[in-house]
Amino acid sequence: MKGDFKKAAKLYRRAKYPQVIRLLEPQIFRYRQNYGYFYLVGMSCLNTGDLGGASTYLQRGLGLKPNDANACLGLALVHLKRQEIQEAIRCYLEVLESDPGNKIAARGLTLLQKDASVTGIQQLKDSGRLSRLMPDRRRGAARAAFLIVTFALILTGAFVTLWYTGALDATEVIREPSVEMISIENIGNLVDFSGEYRYLLTEKEIRDSFIAAKKHFSNFDDNLAQREINRLLGSNATITVKEQVRLIAGYIPKPNFTTVKHRFDYQVVAADPFLYSDTYVVWSGKLTNLAVSDEKISFDLLVGYEKNQLLLGVVPVVLRFAASLNIGDAVEVLGKVKVTENEGFYLEVVSLHKLQTRETT
Image (cartoon, rainbow, N blue to C red; front, side):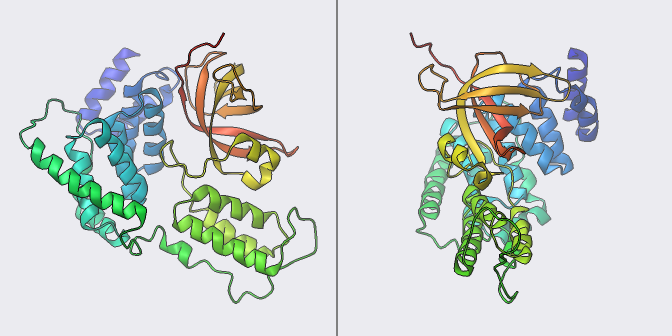
């Protein structure tokens, strides 16, 4: 096992990224507690253009080693390549919070300061300049320009603050132009009273919900967008309307712990699981009924019980990646809400990390 990892590390240094993936990916359960494994595979995926794989592996690496600068920088580059500007900024800010002199994070924010538009990011991709933001694993970089970098960060930080607060005009930053083209105008009747439906909506309510879904998506409020999409899918809206909102849903990416907005509470989701289907929640608790197979790990999460104080509910959880877990572990889970046939729900885990808690007596 150690021999394979050393071989993979050597291949990685020689930029043999496909070979790294082929060697390590089948051994995920063997290296389930190894941050280096997830980093090597994640960065190899990034270098080969597999952004989905890169995001998944780097996020799992961060679950083992939270706030690691290299993984955060790699994830920021994934977001940039996906033109997810705000998510990239969050990653760079996280790195600079723990390492104010990090040159790659400073460079990334400086580039975004110059031009954070979709066109600008595309030009960086086309010119190959994004490669300058690839994490550098070498240690002990010179600090001679520390003051200059700090000054640049002050200016960049001011830019980021103004942008987030809305003081700067961010109208040029269009998240996904294709979504802007999705419309229900000029399609005729929006209401269909035949068949069965969960939510009874008027034509105005259908139109308002559709507009809200697009607005939330453009504002990176994916959970709120998905909730409106679910409302329309479960309503008496026509098939044409539902086809359009499914197109919007197809552009919603998988988040990480730092990018989830509007974190719905357990009680809210439990009251109407269908309305929150495919949204992402961040819940903590203790795990029980742990079962491990070759294909998945499953357990029940005692939501809210991580400190042995308040049990909000019990939720089935499924992981389709390796993790070292024990019954009684206190964990925080980022999971996707999935509705079952009996209208209950479970969580499909995106990322997970253990919590350090003190027992309450």
